[in-house]
Length: 260
Image (cartoon, rainbow, N blue to C red):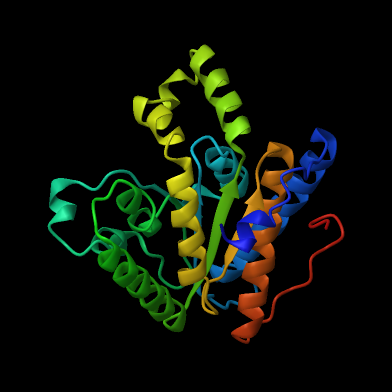
């Protein structure tokens, strides 16, 4: 297993009270940055498009984190794209083809709930493609992301990580809750038995696709309060650093806007 995976501290926790304070502050900062990059503040300076990409085990909390990330933003200023099994039409094309219509242009923002990394995870584990195709696809993904960044896109890649025991606990909660039962499918249960294969695939994914243009950030998601704060603050940090790298003037956060 990758040292990066082994290094994730799943004991990291925050209280609900501290989490709520930091989420609110981070959301205010996200609104500030989003209006800035959309060219809606003085001075008007449209910034690079932003992609925030979520991956992780089933029930890792991607949906809840996405809701906190986008909750304070005007719906006109962000798109959330859920990615599922490709359609027959999409299978007729290169595997990256179906993502192009959703990519953000300058001044835009797209959140991907799962992504092109399904190629290196699900398709690999289910043996829908062979090893040579997996390795070639990883190289194509790196080149794809590099071309987007060079063309003016900021990419933030997040993996939300939970233990096998925590996943089972969350599955059982969903199974008993009539308002969450729809989230649980037979495939979710079956995939639990494939966790070792997914960990091997994840290890290779991190080795092959963590690159200077688009690094991976691994989020300990055993505690949802901690994970949601970590997601928002990581996105802000990556976003601000990339804007500064590109020569944009990033206004300082006010004390009541953003608390580390």
